Length: 383
Ligand code: FNR
Image (tube, rainbow, N blue to C red; front, side, top):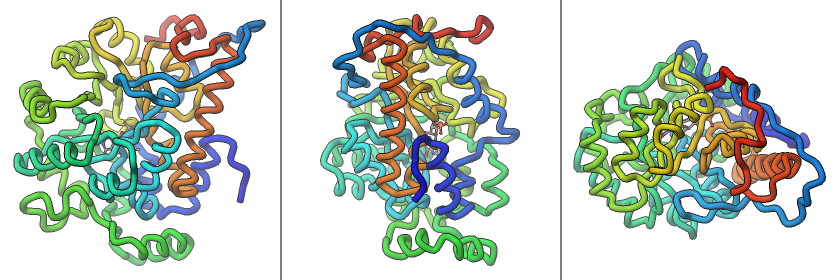
């Protein structure tokens, strides 16, 4: 077993151990992947200011996101098909997050259902909702989230139409995978993935199968999204979902100040500055570049979170110093899961925590609340 010291180590193991179709699904962006790449590279342009002779005894990364205690300002982002990266992947990731003390967000497009995750965890988790045409399904899934004790609804606004990712089309992405000669040849080198998968019954979209009407073959993500995701989403529908849910609400996928102002006006608990990890509108700004004008536009009217491009604890620290109150990691935890299951997700969280804690100390700060823009050198033309 190689020594794991950073997220890149987990990424390499993920690639080695997981079917190509699912590794590629995770490690790709839409069209030219410009936004996907810049989400990561723009963090590198922000530099940290090293401070000395500051007492660093008794530091803590603990804080709150939407009023809920978190061990560090990092939640696991909703990631579709997590249960294809590893058998029962959502349950494994949720357990790791629960033990670490950070929120886990279950995707609508998960393999394990809301009820599966609730049955295997003891603390409330968050649930991400896509707005569907099937109104009965929509009402029903919101009720299921309430019944399971979900403590925040994350409503995703940037995927009413699916962005095109070339690799998924070329690989024939489906859940479960269709056993073509190419897939079988790939699986021959990844037999432990296959063995684990044979031992679980959870191989399709757990929240959808048996719950939505007119679902003959939900295995194709493309077919399902094209038919079921409601492209008529507007602010009125968002208000209606807020009413229906009645609990803490997070609006995810806001990239421009005017939309951020509209989102804040709904009275939601937080917005997430996110471009879906560069998987939707290729050519959009990186999320860290999009953050400053959004913060200026909304002021203190709503809590602002950020995701897309976070691969280290230093990235988290930079986002917090720029003004975000919380962050989410997508690929960083999926690499951990694909590499080593639940243990790998824990490892990803440990890596990020350690990097954040050490960097925060070397920047002369003891608590998340003390982290501000003063610890950064941001290029003048950044925002
Ligand atoms: C996602 N993301 C996502 N978002 C969402 O709201 N619902 C979903 O089902 C998914 N599915 C999904 C699958 C995969 C493989 C990835 C990588 C991402 C987007 C996700 O929540 C988050 O916005 C990004 O992953 C953040 O970018 P990083 O951390 O992966 O760079």
